[in-house]
Length: 437
Image (cartoon, helix red, strand yellow):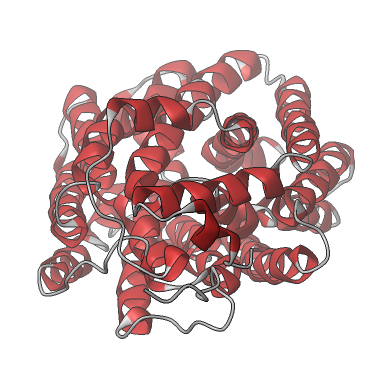
């Protein structure tokens, strides 16, 4: 056994890491295109089925509810079975359900199809970041995970643009927007079955982590301070993102921004979100060299700065307001890489999929599940948009406070995760003491 293996220092990614990352990134891109297509065509769906804003809000919630309820099951399986098989299964399921969304002849059928989209994404969500974490050592991980999550703003942007262009075109209509990602999703899903899982924990502990998680291991996740604080902060962030993204198309129509506003919003998400996600990951890795709580510090500062940008957007006329919306989205996405990297770093590798799955369950249950109907109810028939967005800004500030508080615990929890990895392999205290942190 090599007792000089450092947790990520001096190590290189495992063979095939970049190819695997590319495939997972492409899948994640389709994932977020699918999510935001729904938001982009929401006004057209509401017109087609003659439903209220509150009722329409449950379309977004249906996907999230099934996603969060089934994620723990898939997370449990991903800690025991082939993660690539689960990813492939999930992608094929959600691609078929997305096609069914376009076929929907009734609101009920559309609601059910969104439920199955959530189940499919639950097979993918907990497994994908753990595959990446087992392919790349910690010194690469912040930037790499940030790169993986650039799919969030880029995919969301493409979703808005596709939905805006096709949904507003009388020759195509909103149904066609759901078909765009179906065939690519099926092809990428099939590719997953040709990939093999990387050994769990090799790039962290210098050896593969053996054995299955125990009941005590699972309970330990809930005793990690950084995990709890991070999950609560991500839940507050999810409420803000869920509330903003689902209703932004309707808000822009209320502000009478004009034709093409959905596409403009999509371009802003892509440019601001992509830049912020990459810079956030780089900033987290750089600051971590001098401060152990860097990932939370970067996340907390970023999302706190997003709140005043949202408030300013409410009172500044368009097109000037686009700049404040750009700033809000930039700072909102700045935490993506650091927060998810911290989540991976504080948990034993054999528990990562379950930890991500539990995180998915909690952040959606407290965040973007209630957000669309709550925001829709606040706005109501009287168009109380300012009140709704003040609530969104408040959740941004809450997330910032939580991350800044959690920065004091992060380094200690990362060190504890290293010790638990060594203990999983039965190393002595003397051997562990020789390993630099």
